[in-house]
Length: 117
Image (cartoon, rainbow, N blue to C red; front, top):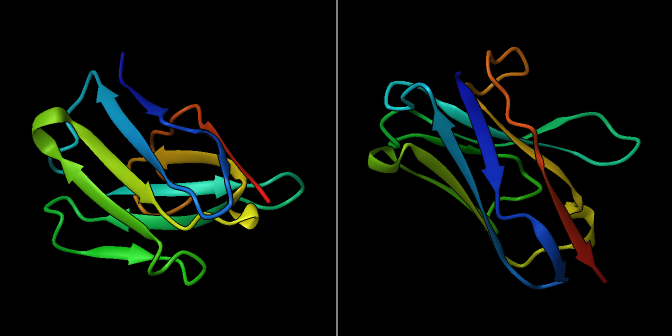
């Protein structure tokens, strides 16, 4: 069964760091762009970051530029989101998806990130 699984979320104080992982099972991520999205309570889902299949191209939302870094390890079938200098406004459920748009085919179940002030 093809699925994406996120991990690495948790509770952290403002200024702290977390690394999220997005691992695929049942299919390979090698030829796919992978995106990270987040949804805070009462807000719409927003695109956070995306990485091309080769890893050569990346995208970051303005709100996370300079703080978040996306990377991938195709040998591990995993994409990472390193989040530094976290702010309370980064609190959300973070999802990865096979693509960089809201119409992506596969989505993970999400992982909660909570940043306390």
